[in-house]
Amino acid sequence: MPVQQYDIIIIGSGSAGLSVGLFMNKAGFRVLMMSKTDRDIGGDCLNDGCVPSKALIHVAEIINKARLASGFGLEVAGSVNFQKVIAYVHSKQESIRQHENADWLRKQGISVALGMASFAGKNEVEVDGQTYSGKKIVIATGSTPSRLIVPGSEKVRFLNNENVFELESLPGKLLVIGGGPVGVEMAQALSRLGTAVTLIHSGNMILDRDDQAIAEILLAKLREEGIIVELNARLEAFLSGTEAVIKRHDGNSYTFKFDAVFAAVGRDLNFKTLCLEKAGIRVHDEKIVIDKYLRTSNKNVFVCGDVAGDLKFSHAAEFHARILINNFFSPFKKKLDNRHMSWVTFSDPQLATFGFSEKQLNEKKIRHLKAEQTFNTDDRAVVGNFEYARLILYLTPKNLFGNQKILGGTMIAPGAGELVQELILANTSRISVNAIFDKIYPYPVAARINQQLVVKLKESSLNSTVKKILKGAFKFFG
Image (tube, rainbow, N blue to C red; front, side, top):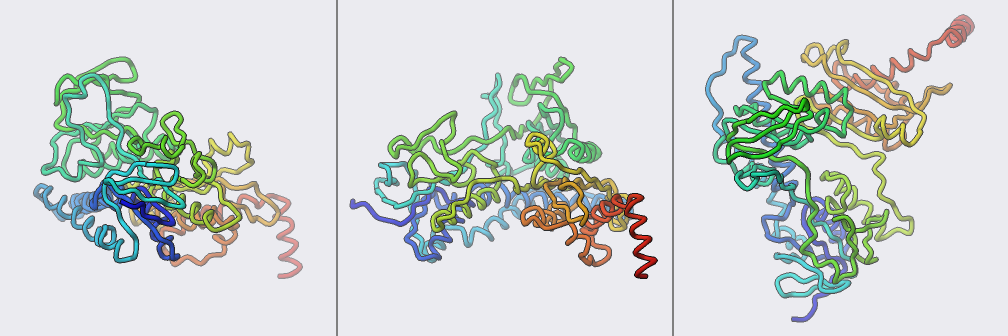
């Protein structure tokens, strides 16, 4: 068969691949997208990650609020119909799948090749015996859950984000391995639906990437809900398909019986079947070697999304896509720079983090000021019963005009992922905190907490010298 020619070939059809492919198609280029199967279009986000997990979390929040209503005299009884829960999750996936499938992409003018892709040359990729050539090729093949390997692992059928949404019934007793975002989110959601959950984490605190003091607040909330969390503990072995040996930080081990194990121990990059050597693409330490522009050792082949070995978020994949699209057309090349990256753990309460952390600022020797704000005097938090919430910001040092910039921050609160959006905008666009100080917030929106912190910053500048100046100005101009 003759080699088919395209302007750009995208291997993979998740958040990264779709972001590049859809734009290039709209810009008038001949685009070929490759996916293992039609159902794989949409990638991890649609099929195994963001969409189904957030649908499950949504249902779990409804169930939890129904139980909390008993505190106000409304008694709710009965058990959760898990089949209906999973049916709801699947219905939301299918709703989104209407515009993330091969037929829909073809109707937009994009060519789609289904099957296992592998390089056949520097600018050629083969799928199912057909060879395709592209002026530019983007590898956007994502990642998959890492396997948990300890003695006896072969005895256990593990759950992970790829199969948990296919469960037919809720496990009575669940062992969650890993205290990162996926482990925490799924532990809480399944606990709220009726599973007895024990979470094992090898670190000192859950959510290692986030501020420890903020993560401690979430840990306390998880434990309040009845989730058993073992820190500084590790899984030593499986004795059978329902028994595990867990070693605590004090050196003592115990046997734990379970009905299912959810493994959230990291992700592996998907590229090993691509025959990268045929395209002259180097690999080192199980990662594709790339430069700061997401380009491989083959100047016409790029990476995008999880497979880049960078932060594994859907929005990071979209960020990569914007870098590539800019660099395809502009002489002013953009580099991969995560200084404004943000992420949210969609637990209840949510934990949102953005920009530089305190550790990064100290490592880079960037002068900064740390400002903290509790929610216990915020009217919305008081009536909404989330006085425990907290906001931390890292700012540039004070100056005469008070136009400090936000370098980074973190918040734990219900809906924190939404509340920090204006702070992320200020961080990304280097907007002065004066803009937040001057903003008129409708009372009593929860986002007023951002202004409360800025007001406190302003008040802290009222030293004796400033007070004298203000008194003079009041006397003279007032």
